[in-house]
Structure formats: C-alpha cells, structure tokens
Image (cartoon, rainbow, N blue to C red; front, side, top):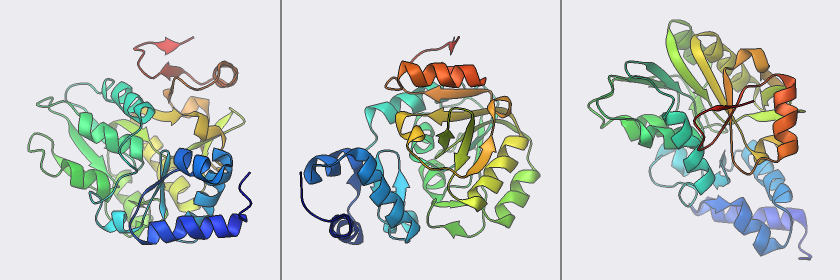
Length: 261
C-alpha cells in the first residue's frame, strides 16, 4: 500500500486541480493504491475547501465553473452517458424541462432531441453554455450567485425564479441515497433549491448510482413519494435495487425503457 499520508495525497490532488487539471477517482485510486471511497473523501474535503467542483466520477478545477467548456472530467463515463441517454428518452414533445446541475444532466443537454418543441430551464452555467447555440430550444437561465461547490445558482433569487414556473419534467442532479429511504444532498442551500424544484415539477426524476450510496447527504430533499422515478445504473448491486424498491422508489434501469418491479 502507498505510504503517503492522506494530507500529502490530498495536497498532490489539490496541486493538479490548481493547474487546471480534472481528476478521476478511479485513476487516483490506482495511482495511490487506495480505495475509491478514500479518494472520494479527499475530493469532498477539497470541494468543501473551495478547491474544486465535484462531478460524476471525479472533480473539476474551479476554473471550469467560470469557463465551463474548458474542462470536463476526462469526458463522460460510459455509465454517465447511459444514464443521460435513458433520461433524455423520457422527455416528451412540447415539454418544459428543468435540468439541475450535475455531470449527468450536462450529458442530457447534449442528447436533447432536435425540433421537439421543448424548452429548457437550468440553474447551471455549464448546461446553459452547452445549450445557448441551440436555436430550436428556448432557454431560461435561472440566475443568482453561483455556488462554487455545486457550480449552480441555488440562492434565494434562484428559488424565487423556480417558484414562478410550471415545469413539466425535472431531473435532479448530484444526490446521495441515505439508507435507501430518502434522497439527500450535502449543501443546505442546494437542498432548499431542489425541494422547490420538485414542488414546481409535474414529473420528477433523480439518479441513483453506486456512488450515491457512498455520498453523505445530511439534508433531505425527497422521499419515495416525492419523485416519479430513480434512474439507476447497471452497476448498482441487486441488494441496493431491492432496498430501494422496498422503500417505495420506482426504479428505471439505465438502458431499459420500463420501470423495474
């Protein structure tokens, strides 16, 4: 096992982020000969210190918040792309869709159908930058101060904007699953925003991955009755699938067009 102390390891990761490099948890785990869980703890600590923005599978330097197309975590993983493809396939013609922050929702933005008469709102500068050149998609950017930890606008101004909307379908990003009974997030302001988004949406979807069960989300945003489906990846263990289903969540497996029963 690599003998480097966690703080030293964290300093190495922080120095890479400071030079504008994105990092992947899986690659760092191999390099430092430790578990991905330990790396995720490092990345959470660095994000809390304002040194990076966490995304699916790794972290981005904060420069990417200000210049969102300049860096992405070494491209989307196959799992993230499959989750996004499944979610995009649920969008119906003419809907008003809200894409919350998060790397999976960023992938959904790239997969939105053309000339489907849909409109999109988002609180993510990254997603807005990806869609601004889509002349066929009316775009609403929910403003306010950008939270550097989440890379989104989640303050009172953003909540006020969402409260005036009638959203057909929303996709909730960057969540944790607590004991399979509820969905939560780490940031209190993010929790308030997501609760408002859920309340204003007719169809509500979130994502559950193996990483979701490793994240600590002390601020609850939804119970099973509050979301229409959890879109789960193909690597989620059967035990976790059973636990989620037993708690009352409707599950949709990535790449499968029907709910898991």
